[in-house]
Image 1 (tube, rainbow, N blue to C red):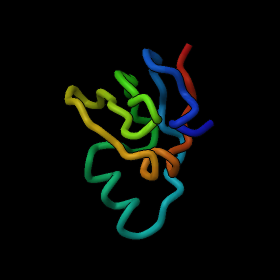
Image 2 (cartoon, rainbow, N blue to C red):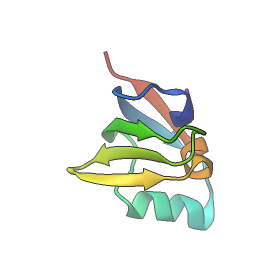
Image 3 (cartoon, helix red, strand yellow):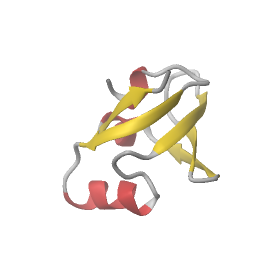
Length: 75
């Protein structure tokens, strides 16, 4: 599933980063890599941006950046 489809308050694991080139590199530089867990804190009313907690810090992603992340919800 895509990150934008997940609910606020859920913890997810990154399964794949679909982007290429600069956008993929930028996501990875922010600390979002394969098998990384993060918590979805907030989503703006129109779905853009999405605020997450990853590796102990808060990060805000645009909807376009969230579209390239395939994630799996943790139970």
